[in-house]
Structure formats: structure tokens, C-alpha cells
Length: 70
Image (cartoon, rainbow, N blue to C red; front, side, top):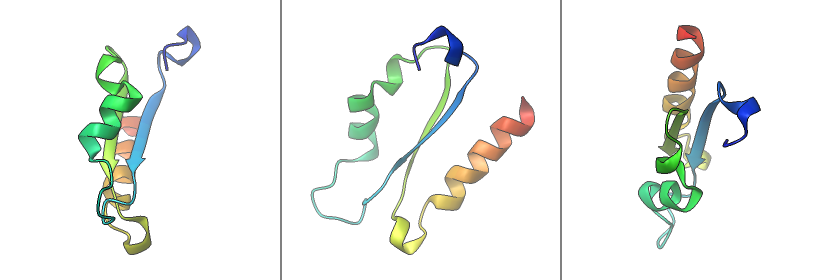
């Protein structure tokens, strides 16, 4: 995401397995990926439990809204 060619890219990251004991929290995943340091970039981290469908639509709704606004 730090490459100049990606300056207008929109990034959605899913923090999956949030139902598993000991799973890294969304904040921990965000910090590990360095998302807070991506100043001026459009990115979002959505916690989810993919096997149960939790959080999947919320992430896609965010992405859709961002892409439609562009």
C-alpha cells in the first residue's frame, strides 16, 4: 500500500477467526499490518467469523460505499 501506484487503492482487510479463543483482536491485526501508518489511504479492517457469516456483509457494504463514492 505504500507504493505510489496504489495511492488511490481502497483496502478492505478481514480479521477472521474472531470466535477462536486467543485470536488476535482487530486492533492487534491492524497494528501488525501497520494500517494506522497508512496516512491518506482508504483502508478498513473488519472483524469477522467467516464460517458464520458474521462481519462479511459489513465489510462488503463499507467497500461498496467507498467505491461508489469514488
